[in-house]
Amino acid sequence: MRRITRRALVGTALATPAFAQTGDWPNRPIRAVVPSTAGGPPDLILRAIGPKLQSALGQPVVTENRGGAAGVIGTQYVSRQPADGYTWLFTTASHVNLVPFVDNVPYDAVRDFTHVTLAAQNFGQALIVHPSVPARTVQELVALAKRQPGKLTYVNAGNGTASHIPAELMKSMTDTDILSVPYRGVAEGMTDLLAGRVDLFFVGTQIALQHVQTGAVRALAITGARRWKGMPEVPTMQEQGLPGFDVVNWFGLWLPAGAPRAMVERIHAAVASAVEDAEVKAQFDTLGLEGVAMPPDQFARFVAEQARIAQEIGRRVNGR
Image (cartoon, rainbow, N blue to C red):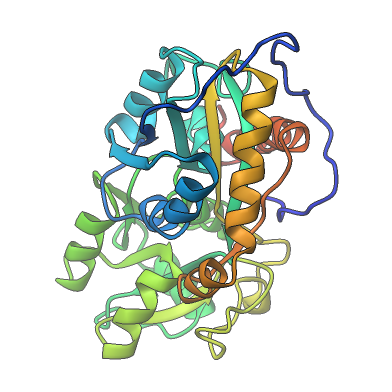
């Protein structure tokens, strides 16, 4: 999976009616639907930028968690809402990444939504293991997996999520057999990892850090191309013998298809201003994130390109 950049990417363009008007929008609170359980990175991002969005738009943006079916339930819900600007979808790269791994997704992640903006990205996931796992490097983990095929287990917090994609990519690149254990969300998976009921987890760096600092888990690697300054001693997957391994998680905002262009541009401007705010930047820094408010047309092309890359990964991993 490629890193996110600010350059224009090849893909489809944003399609919204040029003649649509926004009227007195917004004149009531806005719902930001997060299609996963509460407490994850999308919730934390919305909490950080929410007050700035309210100042810019004049109405509160209320987070509504609609988890289930690897994000399909909440995402499908948004796709069926009016394109009036009062129901947003705020989610992760799994918006496109899960499609090759889930049968009969009832929407098109590119065509059935209005692409508003990228909001943030991380520096990759942290690969952490329970202390009982006798491995201190990725090479040692791979060697252990080869000696004991099918014995090691990893937390899968949802197909196509940032816990699933890097794990399956690692397995594919190293020809190892590590068992996927499905969970409803990150919190449940972390509970079982800490208890030693599962062996390893690709998880957000900020979540990993608090448990690394207490010694409850051991960090082996970062999945992005750069080390994260919060754990500067932890090398990347590339540094440990997996060239080209560069998986970061990103977070974006969509509306149902057909939202008015003026509304889309106003929301993008509000998000762009929010992520450049010094207070928000400081909060993002503690979360291992950087703000990237990609404009709507570029974001639409980016999503289309990421969907293509996800299909390539799906074919590599499981032949879909």
